[in-house]
Length: 192
Image 1 (tube, rainbow, N blue to C red):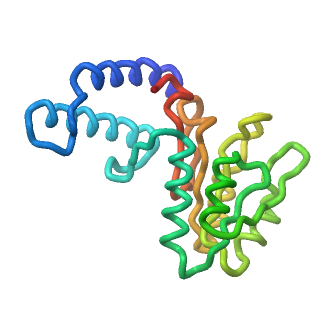
Image 2: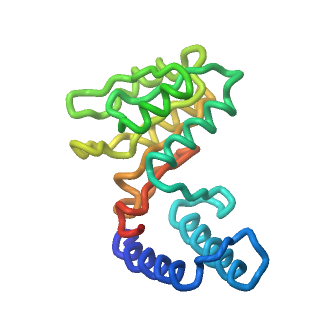
């Protein structure tokens, strides 16, 4: 399973990076080329696990930074559409802060278990000015899993991209389907 395979792979990649990948991977000297190979290998490994191309994988210092970069990038790219960032009412504070920084935060309600109300989400995502939507794969406090694939289908019906904060599930569960931008955090599954 993905959960069983990643801690060992992450540890081996970290050890190789510490031993051999210390140089600047953008330079051309021998140690730098070795660092570039290690970086490219790590990017290819992550891409294969999440169902992306290697050139679509960007490494960030933390899950919070990944979320902020994802929200900011989508918001900037969709500025002509509007400035509304639609989030579930139970998103992680990193997503909420990023949404406020990028534009107008609008919350979509959840049920008594913290699960996204897909009907309300559909109405909200179809409203004017929504640049992007954000839904976590699972809640970091109560563990409620969100219907990411269904939310993605609804968002895509309205041509709205979906950012998924999958920090709680990547490395432990199958990668959710339908996302346009996925944020995860390696330390949650044994990485640095």
